[in-house]
Length: 425
Image 1 (cartoon, helix red, strand yellow):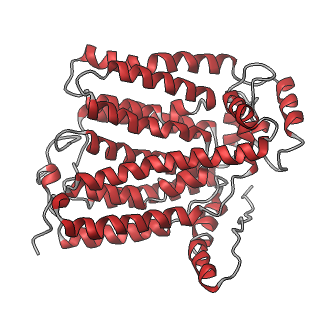
Image 2 (cartoon, helix red, strand yellow):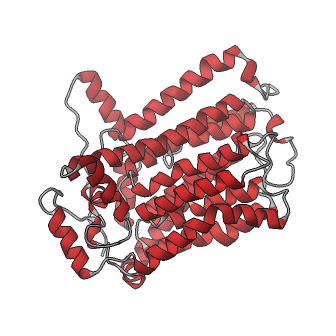
Image 3 (spheres, one colour):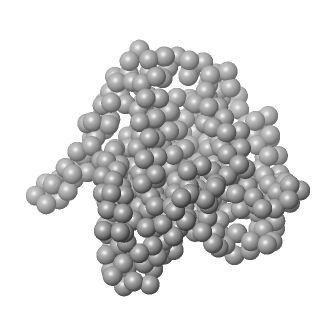
C-alpha cells in the first residue's frame, strides 16, 4: 500500500465516512463531561463585582448582575456553561475547517485536535472565564484569511476585545496572549520588522494598558474581600471559592505554590510531560508535519510561550490544567495556521515530503489511531492535582463515560460522583 491520496476534499467517499466519524467523536467528547456541574469555585468567579470599588475580575460579576439581577447563582451556572461551550465550539469549528481543507496534514492535525482531552473535553470541564480568550485566536486567523494585506485595523479592534477580557480575568495575558503573539509573528514572518512591530502593537497596546491597571489596582483589600463574602453568603454554595484568593498578592501566590511540596511538583511534571509526549507523538505521525518551527516562531516559543508557562506555574498550583491548556492551545494554534494559510504552511525548513502533499501510509494510520485511542481514554479531572490525586484521577475516572453509556442502555439513573482524594502533605 503506497498511501491514500493527499487531498480527498473532492471525494464523496471521504466526506461520507470522515465527517460522520468526526461528529461521533465530537459527541463522545461532549458526552464524557456533560454531566459535570460547575464547582463552587468556578461559580464564585461571577460573584466578584465593582460594587465596592475596582478589583480584578470584577467585570464578571457586573455581567452577572446586569443580566440576572439578584439571581446570581443561576446566572453564574449559566454563564460558566456559556463560556465553556463557546471555547469548545471554537475548537470544533477549527477541526471541521481542517477537514474541509482536506489535505493529509490538515486532516491529521484535525483529528489530534478533536480527540485530545486537553481541547473540547478539557474546555467544557474547566469552564473558566479566562476561556473567553479562546475565540480570539480563531479571529486572529480569520484576519489573515480575509485581509492578509491589511490586518492592522482588525488587529486593533480585536485588541480592544482582548483588553475587555483582561478585565474579566487577567491571567489571559499569560495563558493566551503568547499564542496570539505567535500567530501574528507567523503570519507576518515575511514582513519587514517595522511592519511586524506595528501589527503586534496594534493588537497589544490597549491590552497592555489594561493589564498595568489591573496589576496596579486590581488586588482586593481585606475590606473588599469581607464585603464580597457577605454579599455572596446568601446564595453561593458552601466550599472553597475564589473569594478566598481575590486579595492575594504575588508573594502570597508564590508561597502557596512552595507549600505544594517538591514530591507533588515532580509527580505532576511527570504526568504532564508524559501526556505532552503522547500528543507530540501523535502529531509526528501526521504526514507532512515539519520537523522544526521557523526561526521567528522558535523565538516566540522559547522567549515568550515557555516563560509564560513557567510564570503561571510559579503563581498557582493548578498544574494539571496548565499542562492541559498549553498543549491544547499549541495544537489549536497550529490548526489555525493551517486553515488561515493560503498555501501549504511550513513552520520551518521543508521536510523530506512536501508539506501538505504528503501521503498517509499504513504505519502512520495505525500509529495515529492507537494514539487517538489512548488520548480518548485520558480523563480530565478537577485541578486538585497533588501527587496522589493525579494518579487517582487518571485511573479511577477513566471508566466514568462508559458507565454513563451503560446506565443509559440499562435505564439506570446516572449521577457523576466527584472523586475524593486526600492530598499528600
